Structure formats: C-alpha cells, structure tokens
Image (cartoon, rainbow, N blue to C red; front, side):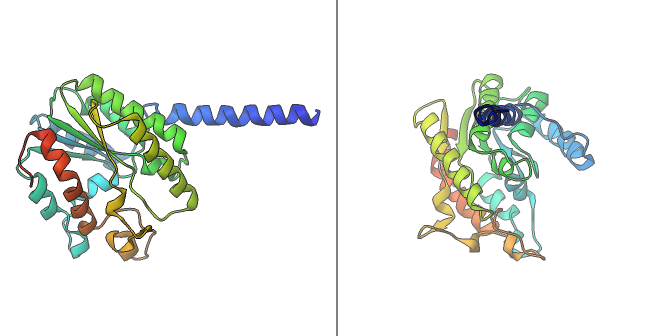
Length: 252
C-alpha cells in the first residue's frame, strides 16, 4: 500500500472512530445489568409518582446529595434540606452514568408522567473517564439529553450546568473547557434552556480549589472530582438566584 493510501485509510479510521463515539454518547445505553443501579432506578420511579416540582438529573455528583456523613465533608443532606427540602425535589443522580445512560433513563420512565417546574441537568464528567469520549461526542450526548427532556417535558424549564472542573489530566481539562464553551454558545440566556457556568465556584486564582473536593480525603485518596459538602453548598448557592427565578420562588 502506498504511503498516501495509508494516510487516507488512517484518517478514515480515525473519522470513523470519532463518529462511533459521537453516536454512542448520544445513544441510550442501559445499566440494568448492575443490581444496585436497577434497584435505584426502581426506587426513583416510585419517587417520581409523587409528582415533583424540581428534578435533578445527573451522575455521582448529584447522587452525593443523599450522603449524610459521618465525616463533616460528607454531610450533604443538611445542605439539600436547606435549599431543596421544601421544593418537592427528586434526585436522579446515578454514580458512573454517562450522557448515554442518562438518555436511557429519560426514555424509560424518568421523564414520563411528571411535569416539574424545573429540571436541573449536570452530566458529562464520566464521558471523560473510562469510556474516554472527548468534547465533540460529549456535546452530542448532552444535546441529546436536553432534547429528550424538552420533548417529554415541554412545560418544564431546564437549568443546564457546566461540566465541573476536576484534576484528572490535561486531556480532561481541555475537553471540559471545550464542552463548556460550546454549551454557553449553544444555549444563550433567554432561550428554552438556561446554561449556567459554575466553574468559578471551584477555581481560585486560575487553579482548582482542592479544598472543595472530597476525593483527596478518601483512603486511599483520589484526584479531585466530586465536591465535598462545602463545595456542594457553594454550588447550590451559585445556582440559587437562577433556580429561584425559574421556579418563581424566594431565594433560599
């Protein structure tokens, strides 16, 4: 094979792989083979039958709201109660979920038979993990998640949060920044979807504030990825002016 032909073949394979990843990130993928995930999915279906006014869709960062210690940095529940306890809210965060897994949940009951005033969406961090989906497929996945909610919940306002900063690799940092910049352009203020960039909550003087994450406190420690209870409280406070306005509620 001539060098030119090899180059064309190589480029074709790379483009094909990128297309496959984009399709996967925006394809509904179930995790029902995992017993804990299946049980949580069933539990959340029961909660949704109570007709919530506020729903949080996401991954482990959302699910962490249900932790309540014993360490102070893991006491999320009091913060949840402070901001959302009287707002008839349901937490649909699932550890490890990608945009593809959230899309499956939306299509299999998590956006059926309900009409919340607001849906908060925080998803995409796990796309940069084991599945290693870069910015472009991740954007396709987030767009698919948002589009599904808009179709199934036409009367619901959507608050789309930026992918949170972390300390995993320069590749993750670059793709996180690219995703958030693209989301800001795609969902401008005043549209059907409100995008809120909360990166500044976790960055001080241009560097990640490691003190706002729980991962370094684990045994053994992990790189910062999940906000601590303090970090999550700051996140909730940063969201509050926008969220309260969308709900037509007082600021908490």
